[in-house]
Length: 82
Image 1 (spheres, rainbow, N blue to C red):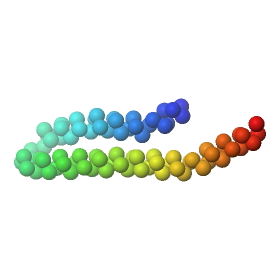
Image 2: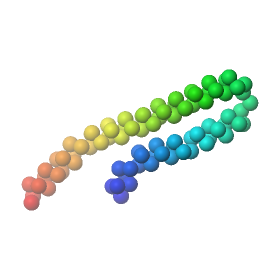
Image 3: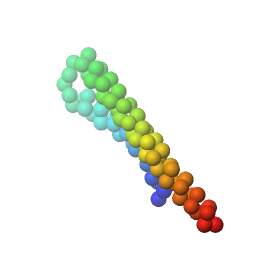
């Protein structure tokens, strides 16, 4: 279970990289915009997606650094009991 939790951010990012472009492509086909505006909106969508990926990574790094002292503390307590 802990292994799945460790790889969850990578799985989420990979899923976003696979699914979101397909959704964007379907949206572009459904929307009736001019070619120039279509390119601008696609660039905006992709840059927003990249920012979301960076946010996921930052949250994961922050969560790891916050929980790291607790893991070290528990590990030291287990050493003391041995």
